[in-house]
Image 1 (spheres, rainbow, N blue to C red):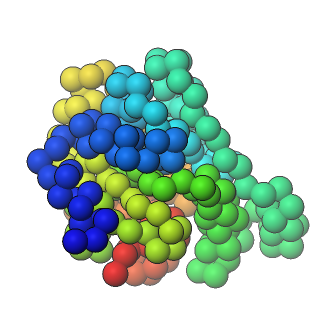
Image 2 (image 1 turned 90 degrees about the horizontal axis):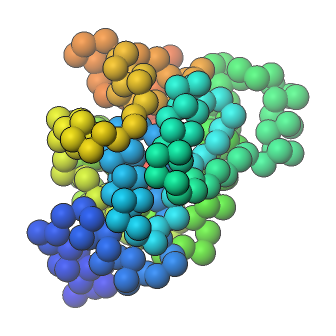
Length: 234
């Protein structure tokens, strides 16, 4: 049995908080949680902060977020009295891109959009994950087709660490109910048709019946709608 399989076996039948507590004992000081302040991330942030779990919470400050996202970010820090660490893009890389191509080059081609995501999100994420052993995320299985082939614990080859998704098997109703019961602050854009919230220029509301991620990079082909943060493990 591999180390991954051993840990998966230990996590069987555990709730999210119990599982996170177990993992903090296995990887002390080497667990981080990435939040973009969406429904799922706010649930996990609440679990971490209210249980004083020793997990560093961080976010990627792309510089292009919605005002509503900044509001829930600030409200979350006020409510729990805990830090949320911000990782910004590399100034030199960002300046070079904007000086050469302008502030909205991502609309012009998939390559340009991936370059922007790479500078604003992927490179800062790599810095945030460096030196850690486990990355906690808010991914749920029902969010997109390719994520249904993942498990709640997986090996991330790209970043050379484990990834754990505490509410992987939850549905959206469970997430909303948790937020309601625990009075968790959430992004009000969710109430206006935004199930997935990223950078303001690249996110729109979705229509009834549209795919969960139809509002992200809506001008591109559906098959190209990942930004490089979460590669599906084989």
